[in-house]
Length: 181
Image (cartoon, rainbow, N blue to C red):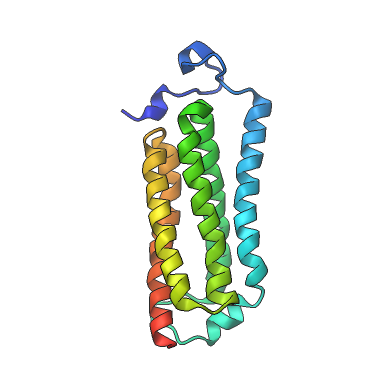
């Protein structure tokens, strides 16, 4: 059974949710959503600061035939960041804080790693180091998905497109690195 089935849903009593401090009020729900969005925006901003000319740099690199066009990355990351923020909020609201503290910490770790990749790959042009970093990111995302799944299948599923894209991006990073060295 999905553990989300036993979690709080709006309109349920705190006793059904299993904690006196639970369910969260609408204000704390809104605060949780805002914090989730702000964390994702911080990761995105870190990457975008060093990626001001990423599209032209990306287009100038020798790429494998299966590499996507540079214009695709913006829309893909917009959707992924929305899913990433929603997954953390969904997990946070599904369980009391004490139960989700460790998965949320893992989530923050993978966001930090997410924010580091673009400065390495585009800013510093350290494609090999960026590949090592994206492998660490992929592992961190996988561990986060597993940790989220223990508390909410929905929150974990919301991260699966991100995990798939990260695996794809790692393959692309390796190919671009090899083709441009």
